[in-house]
Length: 434
Image (cartoon, rainbow, N blue to C red; front, side):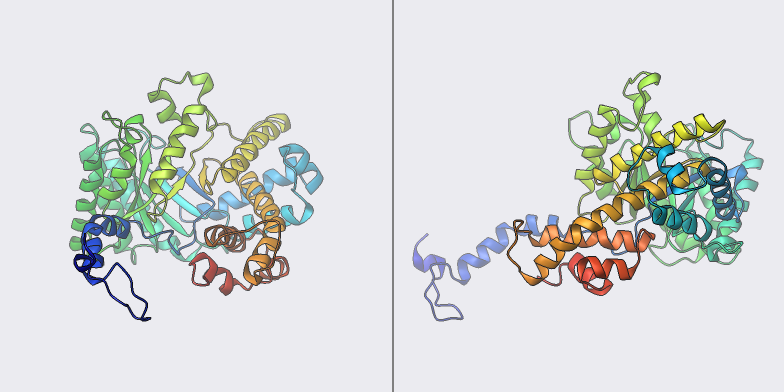
């Protein structure tokens, strides 16, 4: 291309350049596909991510469940780890100081459940249609009534239901249950804030597309605002991660969700079984589980869709030795997930709440201790042995905010460590301070 064809120009500053308006317009045209693709990667959402999701079978759910779970968790602590030394010894995780345990106890008393799913799938089992109809309406009403909290305990950040899969055998039942739950909530005062529906065993983008259509129809029929209904997709079969053509199906699931997907949740045991892992080896830290979750994390990165780890079915029940062994396993798995960038996971039993919060708080507090100096140096442009870039500063600030929002430490501690107020941390997360 000749200088004339390039449209050579002196530009705004008067300096002559070889690339002028004509070539710049050509570049714009060539990059239109890339620009369109980038628009589908909006970055991390501003809303707070919960540390966990608590699943409870529909027949056991009542509006005061968070308060009951918190009380049960506190009783288990009183019985099997009455002080910080006993708790740290029981769970085998360093950093669980008296301050951490105090914060865990306060959390269990104030907001023991950050995210709640009423389960109409595996945890509920097959029931007569009239029984599930009644349970679905009751669950919707209870979710609406519990949206403001209950028994002195704050409501979860998110709440919703898990329905049956969209596989042919359960599709009609799944649709009817979702309809009745949403209808019950609307009739009882309104859909709770950040309500989500979980679709299990998703394997094909068409299932996400169908759920979008269902959400649109329910919003129109029940007078809800467009976009009010959001959902999560459960990664429980290998085809949800890698398709028959070798492509990452999970990326297509996200894009087929038309902006309604809140999260991707890994299903430990369904996925492991479907992948042929022996029952004795099915666990969150199996190599196949790590590979699947890594692919999911990469596919979801920057899309605004959060990724949640799965569950362990070893729960703290029985004698002291059994409780301590279950706590030790759970605390190790939570800590391991956090270090791999999975900040949320499933809890199936109230006895898992102490280790969920203790492991999370210990991790976040340890991160604060090392993050503070790096953030101070980044903001002041001080010369240190580490040259952090804006993306790293964003990650550092996000970790501090996660600790503040979850209760791992307070604003005074964060300010003392980083020299930054919460608002300034938020600007770094949004990369407004570059």
